[in-house]
Amino acid sequence: MTNDIAPASIRRRLATWQKATIALVALLGVACAGLVTLGVGLKHRYESRVQREDILGRGTAPRDDERWAEGPLNLLLLGSDSREGEPDQGLYPGQRSDTIMLVHLNAARDGATVVSIPRDSYVDVPAREGSWAGGKNKINAALAFGGASLAAETVHRLTGVTIDGVLVANFAAVRQIVDAIGGITVCLPYEVLSTDTGTRWSIGCHQLDGRNTDDLMRQRHHVPGGDFGRIQNQQFVVRAIVEKVTSENLLTDPARLDRVLTTTAESLTVDQDLDLTELVLAVRRISASSLRFVTVPAADTDLTTPAGSSVLLDEERSAALFAAVREDRLDEWFASRSATSVPN
Image (tube, rainbow, N blue to C red; front, side, top):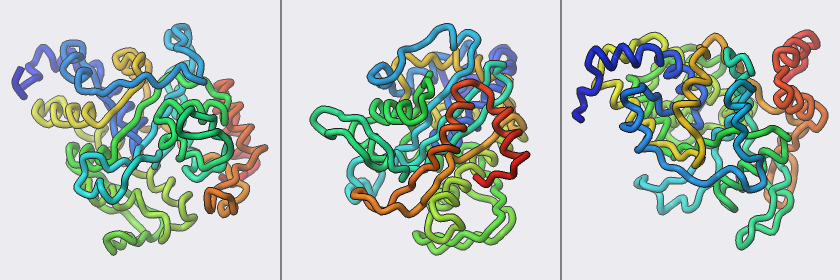
């Protein structure tokens, strides 16, 4: 099959999946920068490019077919900071979860909430034979100690949330996806200065290519709120990606569509049992307007620990959020939070 992969008959079949395209790109945003969007006739072209690992099942619940059929779903999205394949990979050996997002799809499948977990959260990380004896550490260390499997187990134990799928993106994913869709517009309510490149983004809207997007998302020092400002920047990028994909009909440009889907597929590692077509069906009614964002509340953002400066999560407020996710009542949680004007 050549790059001219979408003649009229296939485009018609793909048209019914366009909302799913938008939703999946939005959900993965920074963590995965987009998912493989599968048209019926093109499934194997892209699915075969996704790497698969045995991630769930060790310390987490097995796949629940009933939840996939009609219940709420929770996806764990991990952005690995591994430089494998990058020119500077020798300077940054190993990997940690640079981005941790828990995406909750409600049972109606018409809304999604992205819950960002601070990567320096000081939590219980379960033991993993040969690499970690178990105990307290930063949550992002779980990926280094035991891969995506241990990261999923750690998040499951922290939140009590059933994890229905795990997706991991490599270091270059966001940069490549943003370039593939022709750049994005990110609007900032504050100034950000890059400690890596010296780039300064003023208050307002900015046109960003993949390199600039990657640079912006990694800043945590000259950003209000430090790492929490960094998390907010990641959420801004998620929304910008969704708005860009929404505003342009990629189906009218087969070659560009192929670049986006191929780049996305090759950026991802997913759980062995995750059915991407099933996932597309689950999110097909989610749009940019139905996405919400929240960061797990913290009690202390500069906690001194053996693992270095860490984040102490607010036990009471975090528990309330996690319970709302487990019980699929985030509408109620957001309404209560708004009524009491509780800061994030």
